[in-house]
Amino acid sequence: MRLLAAGATTAVAAAVGVALVIPHASAATGGVTGYASQNGGTTGGAGGQTVRATTGTAIHAALCSRASSSTPIIIQVEGTFTVGNTTKVSGDSCNTADGVIELKQISNVTIVGVGAGAVFDQVGIHIRESSNIIIQNVTVQNVKKSGSPTSNGGDAIGMESDVHNVWVDHNTLLASGGEDEGYDSLIDMKADTNYVTVSYNTFRNSGRGGLVGSSDSDLGNGPVTYHHNLYENIDSRTPLLRGGTAHIYNNYYVGLTKSGINPRAGGKAKVENNYFKDSADVLGTFYTDLLGFWQVSGNIYDNVTWTSPGSENHPAGPDPQSNTTISIPYAYTLDGASCVPAIVGQMAGANKGLQVSNGSCSPQTPPTSPTTRPPTSPTSGPTASPTTAPTQPSGTNLSIGAGSDGSGKASGTSYGNVQDGNLSTYWSPTGSTGYISIKWSAAKTVSRINIREASGATGLIGSWQVLNADTGAVLASGSGAGAITFPSTSLKKITFKINSSTGTPRVAEFETYAA
Image (tube, rainbow, N blue to C red):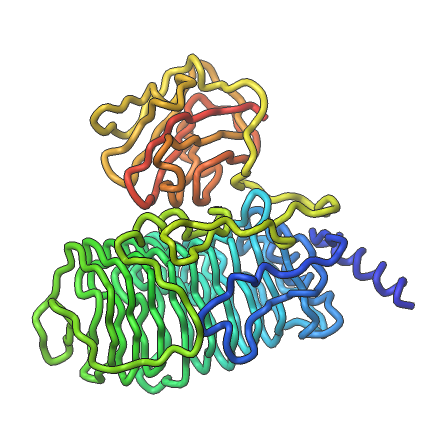
């Protein structure tokens, strides 16, 4: 009977694009630190079956195929996940919904990006009434609450209603604006969400970074640890902390335009060895007279401006001092604040190799984990594209000998440097964003490009789009340089558009391939 049941499960999984990966694998949880290591710890799907999913529907099907809602499972994800390929699946071990990755009334689950990478494009991840969840090594981008399509109330990752022990690690969460553009938040926790660690993530281009507590009466959330995250071009809420406790250390904040860490209504934040750059009001109680508290040490404030105190404006600066004491119940190791921009830039975000810090200001690459190895059996169902692949493409580089152009150039660089076969020359935009193109006099069929960063600039490129410059169509989107695949397209001009980066990027070669 067990053999028959296993065969039936395999058949259902294959029908929706889930591949079983045999033998079983363990979750990549050795690096979990902070409050998610408390309250019994966070192990996700460790010890459970490992499957591969290439659509949102396949993720739901994997959850629904378990023996119970608490049966451990590791779901390796790869490809592009959208509202269109994310539908409700029914079963006794799940409670899913259309148009959102729904982790509701379940436990013991790991979702980890593998292989060519996973991009959740305009589809959010919703965790509700669930526990022992790990979200690792994925990109979630442009999730909207208004416009089309909408998903998850506009939150990239949202947690609410009796959620505990969640680890959000090495992900890239980004938007393309604030509430006026239809977006809400990158990571929210509310309605009794407890024991969470948010580590080695990149948060970009959003009006709201995230909150702990949805209102001044929602005070039962936390504790939360935030460490080694990059916050770039965020208006506010990094985080907004209502009533709970947060331990915030070794994060890099750059371009906070309105306010940053905002404890209020009794919220408490221990803020250690962070680096704040080119930002405003990075710590304090803002937009209310319900005061919060902070303990500060070892932080660097680099070109930080502070507003004057007012009736609903209580900045901690210009000389931040502690006004409370917070005891941390777990062991942790601090990096010096001065090296935080460099090491966080190398480690934070998806597709960075899951590098971590040991307090020596030097990123450490962990041993290969079963969650990130290639599967031991082929993936059933289609492999979604576009994706970013870690391998060097084979075949003829169609860029060599072709003309190229771009949006602009920085001093000492040239557009032609991206198609000269020389890794010591490079093109740079005038800032942290820009675009570079390859064009031909006659149409070429292209299905893969390879963006090779110059020495000393590896890992700087953040989010990007690949465009058919003839039509303006988006062929691929994601984050991090490397090989990028998409459906074969005939065109005369192809553009690589850099939407964000952690510094001035340097593209040594923009290679194009037919296959």
